[in-house]
Length: 116
Image 1 (cartoon, rainbow, N blue to C red):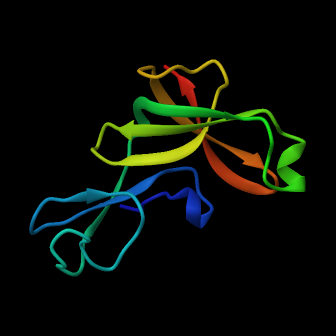
Image 2: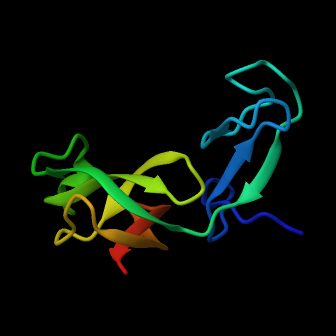
């Protein structure tokens, strides 16, 4: 089975799980950050989760992002057990159930969360 991952140009979110201690994390690593075991499993995330925190960015940090401001940055607790930061619909609130889609922002593909 092929794993889709937006960081590699496809529409999907990949995460990793340790076969030894069962730790779950988002950023790709060659070893488990909890116990150090190498060769973690890379799995496909569903794209579903719950908004944990959010912030509306009014003063964008770069010129290319200023044209998109204001925009919402969200922390999403994925149903698989990891947390990720992404962009989201400005109407989202903490506790909303969400689903990821993928869009272009300032020339880059990014995950963007909408309310379920």
